[in-house]
Image (cartoon, helix red, strand yellow):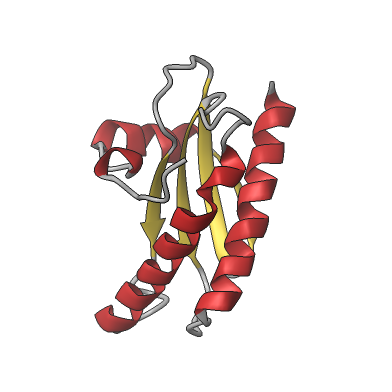
Length: 129
């Protein structure tokens, strides 16, 4: 498995984002909230993720950008948690990670939360089948 975060792994289609927020499931692991939607067909495509830091939570754009960078890096290094043993996704998954804390956490704290979040997300998806 490659430790990259390419364009096709990013959720940026407006139709997919609308489907995610209208019919997706939500769980929270402070300071992160996840909205996710699993697709039943296995197309062999990658999981798609969107990272959001609301302006209402962090006013300064520099702060929002550093938080997004830390979340992206933690996801990039730990995304293998979501994949099967062969390194191929067992199902297609679209999800949004939203940062909900007013304080800026260190990279280590964010990485620990991302690992817990990805494990729980995998459990939720497997339980759904």
